Amino acid sequence: MIDKLRKINEGLLILNKNNEQKEKYELIKKILKDDKCFFKMDIETSYALLRDLEVKEKDLEKIYKELIDDKYFS
Image (cartoon, rainbow, N blue to C red):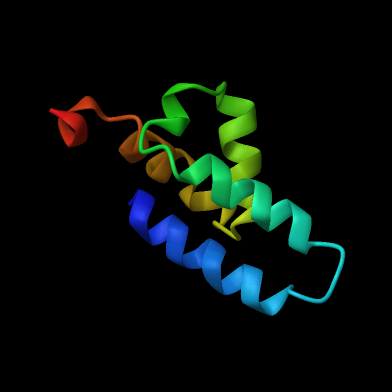
């Protein structure tokens, strides 16, 4: 899932390369370099980041839970 989010962010970086949103997506790119970044931030920040990546509200909880599921890091 983290790789999918990285690809979404890359697409958003391209779309926003010439506007004020570029800095936000550059910062998200740095955050997503860490495979365990969602373990290091609180749930509100995680949800905000997922919203910035255009994840639908109805999918936030499911995606967040998948991102913090230990079985993916065993």
